Every structure is written in structure tokens, then in C-alpha cells.
Length: 178
Image (cartoon, rainbow, N blue to C red):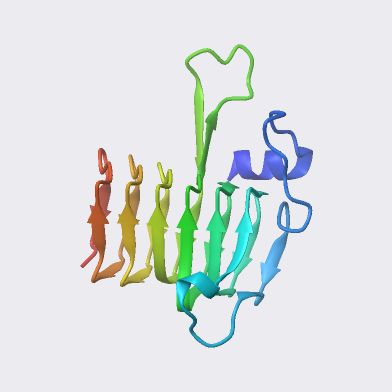
């Protein structure tokens, strides 16, 4: 929380990050991303090559949307629905590992994202989900494929029809989840 507030206040990130003006450092309440009736994946709205930094998504709906090569840094998703035709995350990164503190040799921040009380119908393809937190989520018909889930934490969540293919699960913690 401290790192989230500090980055959000100072907007101080390494030069390789270009926070998207529309999606970064904002609170989204009851917003809809994508939407409409379920569509086939090739008809999804696409957002690509976008850095989304320190945003809060509260009671939002994500549907029929593909996020490709996006970086989510310190984002929080609370009571969100990833529904309809689903959501595709392809080649997305959900963590900022490098430290901004100098000297930063061998130092990492591990500043990742959180999903709290979300309903998730999604595909994570070739993503880095390291240290991501799922807390009290309902993950249904969700795929994790060719992804890095090192250190992911899943607390008090329902996992129904989850498919995991060629994914690194080193250090994953699953607590009171079924």
C-alpha cells in the first residue's frame, strides 16, 4: 500500500514505463470495458502496448476485451466482473520488479496487482503474473497458458474448470480455496 501511494502521488517510474493517460493513476467506479453480448474472441475490442499504472478498478465490468502486451503495475481490481465473452490477457505483465532505489543492484520491488472479490472468466496467455494476489475470487473456465505464476497467492477463492498448461507454478500459495 505504501509503494502504491508513493508511486501514485509522485508518478515516479523508470523511463521504460509510459503510463497511459486514460487508464493510469485513476479510480474507476462501475465502469464498463468492452461490453455487449458475448462475442467470439476474434471480435473482441483490443487494447495493446499500454502501461496501466496504480489504478483502482472498483465494481467494474470487463467483457469481450483483449489486452495484448500491456503492463499492469500495482493495479487493484475489487468486486469486478470479467464476464460475457470473457477477457483475454496476452503477453501482459502484472508486476514491476526492478527497484527505483539507488543503488538497485540485486534489489526488487515485486510490486504486483490484486484481484479482490472478482468473478473471473479469462484467458492468461504468455503472461507474467508473478506475485499476483487473488483474494475471495470466483475463477471459472479460466486458462493459464505459457505463463509465469511464480509466487502467486490465491486465498479463499473458488476455482472451477481451471486449465493450467505449461505454466511455472513455483512458490504458488493456495489457501482455503476449492
